[in-house]
Image (cartoon, rainbow, N blue to C red; front, top):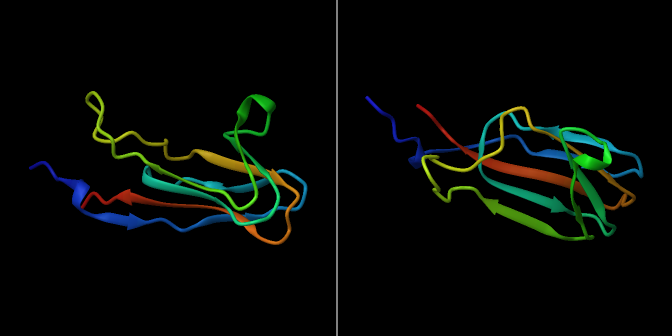
Length: 111
């Protein structure tokens, strides 16, 4: 029997790092997110890298205090939802020390 896992949400552990001026590991996705929030809680800009720290891996630079929510539930083609791969790793580099950069997400529970 097919399971409709779109009706149950799990809450992943928040990924977070306080910026020091060096590139730091924020964390690794352990579930495929349905909704994900990137939150620069500091006053200075933070560069966010995906799956590596080379210039080609720079995804976005977040100004101080900016948060971005991606709702990945939009259904296109045959995909149940559009998402990041499990194991996607995020690194960040910023000079703010008055607040962390965090990534929070929920995922579909398959029970």
